[in-house]
Image (tube, rainbow, N blue to C red):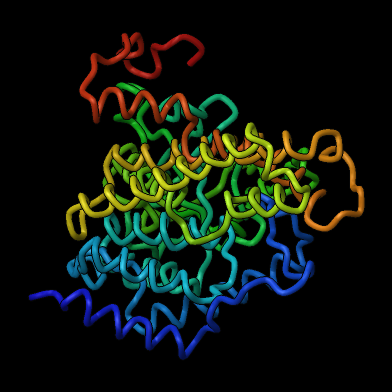
Length: 421
């Protein structure tokens, strides 16, 4: 089936957006000052209100046929090209989209897409559609205390047992024990996409299986992690004898690593290009420099020029990667470029603001738009870890994009034979 002309389709998108959103307007007062936090630091009741605003827009977008634009038709999507997805993002930027959250992004852009690509027809119908429409919310249960950058070293175990329900028509229940960490929005999620080791007697990447775990299942315990910025948007999740029916296995047994790498590529793309504002921008730093009457300083002008150039290069790279992506294709290692550039830009933006403000950045002076920069500074280091550390991104770029020799691998033995397992 031929795809619609991008320019004609873009006009239709703009007309639809105008029916559900207000256009972007210039800030008119200090009350309109941008949120400079990299990660949300809201109380639970405010976070729930924000989630409902986000979900209302996501449902409208899904119902209008504008969700998961590059998802192949065979997997339930419209199967449009990367150019269509880029056109939608450009048009959407002109409107006041409800500020998203990590949980919305994970649900729609990670878990929803993963279930659409790897799930059965029934799973796509029951779960993928609900995730893409945000009727259900899903968190990501990947990282562990001992398996962060080396995710394949995860030790959460899943063993198969006879189902407690004699009427169960599938292969029985999986019983899961382990711990996950750094889980965004777990306290609000209906399900979690979890990776567990189902075969310890093969190499570590081959013995992993993916599951959808109901977050209210007996044996699931969620504990918030207090961040240095004051919020608690992350959690650690403990799983003790959690029973999951076989019908909630995503992909084949042992296919979990493929599910993980595909999902992480989506995460890096979302981290580098998502429409949720994360921290301060060049525009905010420029406004700060003007408010402090520092734009005449040649060193400040040099720093501002450098920051502007890096922001423009990131935008150009996002555009280039999107245009190079095959229509409906899964994101590859190129997604690491946008993720790495995004985290680097956040760090440099915070440094520029700190240099402009000096000691004032460490205390609330009462001046409009100043103290909020501490939220950026305290959150930016975490963004260098989220979605894969900067070091991991450089490894992926070096080995898979530049085709440089890989690092020596010393863990090719079965997982059960590796030290400590």
